[in-house]
Image (cartoon, rainbow, N blue to C red; front, side):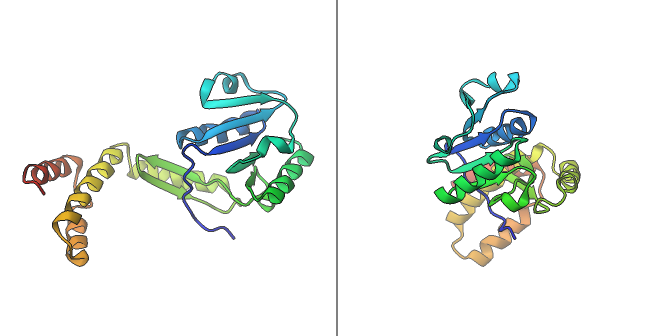
Length: 199
């Protein structure tokens, strides 16, 4: 059973074993969350090699030394023996591991996710049906469009001012609940008024 958590991957060393389409998918997701990615494979898709400084590609067979000091390791190869070896090495080194499409070889599973700035939706079926997770995310995209990125920023800024204005958490939460579904333009006006009035 997996505990739902949010991992801070910014600047963290994450090693991806594999250079194909599955590895590419994982790497693109990691880059979106500012991870420092190192990829190891005998062969890489051209698009991976063209990512420049965002991804360090090592043309090499897998070796345990590749994952030293990694925060997280993802094995995305089509070689069952390599995937098993990566998992065993991670266990020995106490490193979190994800072997793609093999939940029994995972400390961490990737979720289907939707990111709207600081608003992040994460849906998991614990590796049982990723397609279902993607369908649920598709429905969330319809309700939470890209305007929510700005709305979250505005709500955060207003909350900071409210915290300074009102020390009583019950009253403060009531104030926050009253604005949570206001449209973006209304939130802008509220923030401008609070800022002009010095909170």
